[in-house]
Length: 136
Image 1: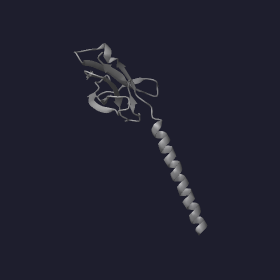
Image 2: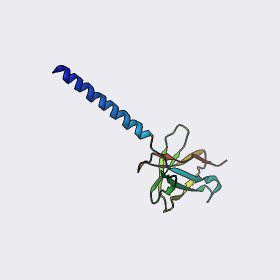
Image 3: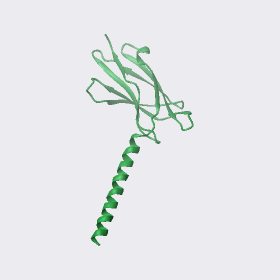
Image 4: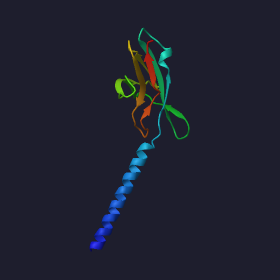
């Protein structure tokens, strides 16, 4: 009887370990969306404001791209290389997957900006390019 319980306990423990490993392996292997942005340095709107425009697309299994329509995109900012990213804005894409917003450069120093789309619908977290805005 004790041998049966020991074997069953070992079998249950092995199944739990295999299940935990397969769950953690699947979480990191989700496909990413595609974020294409126009560099904000080329689109100065006013003294310290720049226009950030980008497109978010979802690649499909058949090789086509569908727009990430009517969904949220986070705009993140950080002040230094070791600082954490902070969400500054949440903008919504249009029916074509395009988002537009203004981002600002500081009077002194440098700020780094990037866009991010959270995981949903089988896609993982996707981060855009990092842009640095400053005045000389």
